Length: 340
Image (cartoon, rainbow, N blue to C red):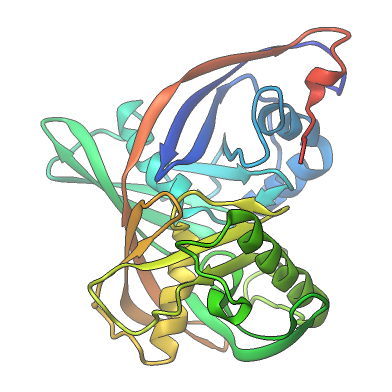
């Protein structure tokens, strides 16, 4: 096993983006990751291989908002592949923008054979299996839509206290990860026109308040019961064919360039719970880059005691390159750093 400050060579990756949000997929050079389940594997990399996350996500090879994927051995027979997600703070339980990229990646690399007009790719994520449906034309993969794990409203209209903004009313939804969802106008902000710094500050204040004041739980596993981030919205939750804009600030104040696949899933679950959107009604969601995801509730289900929905999210991903990384002996700065 590689140790911090030792030389590391030939960690290779495929580089992609979904709506401008990076997806760095490790293809070789990672140590074996033991564990009978994917959540055990997630705990192992967190406790034993976190120096490699810093190496690949942080400067000088990455940046504050970098995002990555570590393929691991599936423990579900139906899975075509299994993955762990990593970012500037640690390891997520779900990532929709990465799943969209992985659908294309699985076909382009031959993990799953292409079938027209659509190929299914089952991806085991820490939150559970998701199925990516990849459009295929002339043998080439294109737009991807995926079916979520059961998504649900955890709480509606919960008031939390913040030091900078006073009391704030939030909804908390689960879409493979937990998000606080708040209209930006509660802070006098607009997700389309306000400064990113101001949006990040407001969202971070909400995340800190929810983490301190709202205990979360998930029926399947305690490892899923944590707040991943806060989504500020334009407040347009009623069904419309026009895009609803949002910005997701997750992990350690990391800004998602995409509309956030698991965040769209959580927003659909909240809108469905409020009866603002019906099953089968598809609507677009827009990110800070202008990228669009589609989202719709496709069926009603349950998750423990929660009324839940299965959500379908669609978007497009693109390849940007390939990398081969190394760390030379004595390069302590090269272990990874972040400037804020």
